[in-house]
Amino acid sequence: MLIENFKVVDSIAIEIDGVYLDLHSNFDFIKLSYDIGKRCVELEWNKCSGEWAKAEKNERLKMVFKSVDVFRTHSRDSKKPFSEDACLSYIGFLHSDDLAIMDGFLPAEDSDENYHMILGFESGFAVKIFAKSIEVCI
Image (cartoon, rainbow, N blue to C red; front, side, top):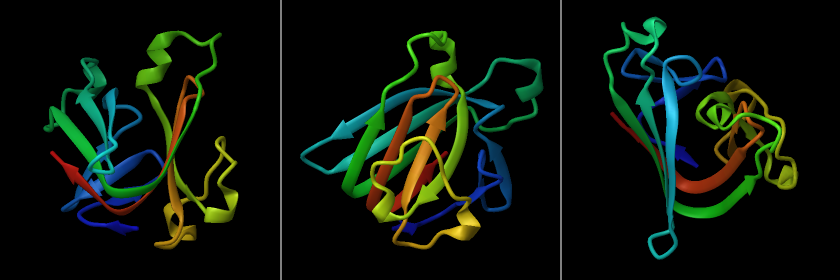
């Protein structure tokens, strides 16, 4: 999977052109869309309204997965408040042999282009994707 214009940092953030975007603390996850015909998955975040995120210059960001081959989700924990769906817990990677694992990850530095990306949220919801490429739009 080619990561076009960003890198995963600290398992909770991405970095684009030297700018650190903390998806755990400064952004709320708002949308997941899957276009079956185009084999495209899009994940979207908005800047948090909390005081701690005021310094964040970017209001929105979208992660676009193109030519998707693997798209799996793991359901949320029904005992958790729905607000926890908006909070990213981690971004990481797993080997393709670990397709069934939906609750763990390896950090970016321990992966390669053949690994699947997994994003876990505080509610227990998780998304695993493998695609030809990923791009972040801000």
